[in-house]
Image (cartoon, rainbow, N blue to C red; front, side):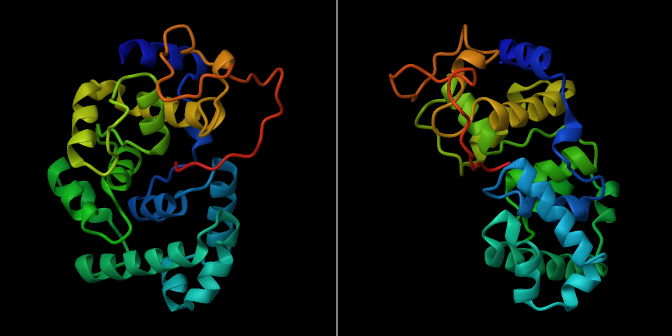
Length: 236
């Protein structure tokens, strides 16, 4: 894992601005819901469309579900995401008395994660994204990109199951607290640019020399220099 960290940091340098995560915890929670099964450009475009249509979360609460779904159509799965966002906002207001998660700043890590994972639409990954990006906590979210890359590099077993809490906890323990944020950022960027779903761009990969490429097909891996890149879909 240390070798992966060093190689990705040298290749990307933690370009956090490319991800577009939000400083406000409620904004980040909604952003994470929008990120499900879409790529970064469409995610960021969808976020802009949503905020243009609904400048405040109160405006969104008063809108119909079809109208919200229409505003986020560019990101795909719009009906499902619209319903989750509305449920999230209702739960936040019920639990905190306002459309805000500012109360999390005054909680310790365990308390904040417990509150977040009980909200509709947020898994351990979503909760830890809010904690990492909005609360500045030393959390390590395991998203689809991280899961895929760590399987291919052999850090976790090929048979590992994503929806198991122990997987998320063990990987968080594996990464030293000061490195969790840069490792997460670089893994997400790497998963969108190079170690994509399907057939990745292995010859262009900074991990190529030592990655065992677990689970990949035996045919020669493609390179951007020889194969036009096709649009890909992957969870953030």
